[in-house]
Amino acid sequence: MAGAHGARLGLAGAARPLFTHRPRLDVNFIRQDYFYPAFRNELTVSLRASADLFARSTITIEGLTHTLSPNGALNVTENASTSPAPAFEPRADWEQSAGSLLLTVAPSGAARTIT
Image (cartoon, rainbow, N blue to C red; front, side, top):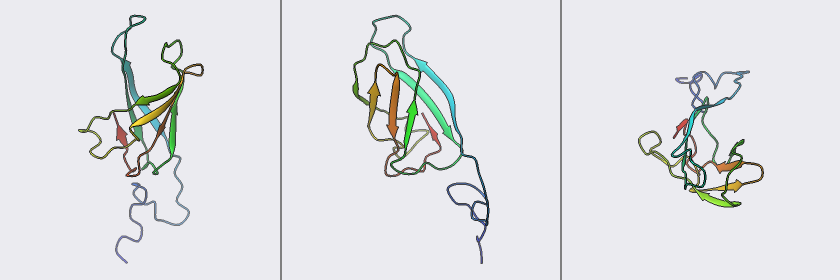
């Protein structure tokens, strides 16, 4: 049977019995437009997953403290050259006091490198 031990979840050999993989989510970089206080700022985050992302799963980015942005939904824009189909929902949940941003993987999911 051709491809019996092929790729699953974007991983070569993942269809083999007892295959194990420890998934990782690496941050390639996080940067901001301005370092001056009280300026309107945009953050750019580049992530790389070691396996495909399941649709509707969530990723939390933490440690974004000392901000002025109130709690609520924030717009998410993606770099179309690194992720042709949207990897995340267009809005993310922001919690100022915790400094956390909750991203939800889009229904298309399966993106591995997201900027």
